[in-house]
Image (cartoon, rainbow, N blue to C red):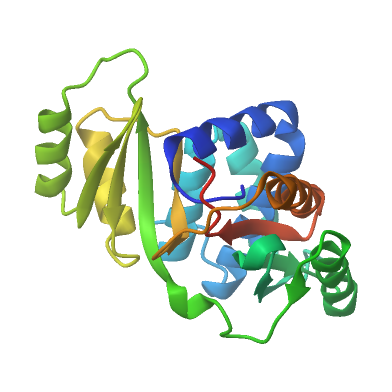
Length: 244
């Protein structure tokens, strides 16, 4: 779940999720539970926009419908003991890469200590809130796989714009559709109605510019991101490392 929305990063992320599918589904389930609670206990995506966004993300990650249903039943149970809160951390990775870490935790002290450790271990440092987020834009990001060449670029672009997208990008074997956060669910539903499916669909922090790293710093950055990915409390890690 780390990185930005370029297709080669999505490919790497997808491979990691395939290898750690249970962990990936657990993190998405945690997001659903929080979305239901913050939505006043509503497990109906028609009346809970945040939940609708997480369900779209879950389906793009191939989370089975039965898993989704069980999580929603659990989240609707008033007696559920899960008590997660959302926390965002900001800091710098090797070479000054800007990093945003989105976490959900039932123990704020534990998570803060772990996040600080991950930054420190490979030469980064945890910063103050707002130190890097100004250089990112929050956007809805829908990625459509075109590795088999099933879609024509112009057709997908026109369909995306007709569905209310803000921007469109062709990147190698994939198309990326950008929306405002508020329009994400409507655009995703409209694209789905046109028979498009997504390999990634979520609200992302998209960097305004990218930083290239030396081979040594790139290796440290990769290891730091692996630590974040393996941390049960970390939901997403966004950064502006240019991996090309």
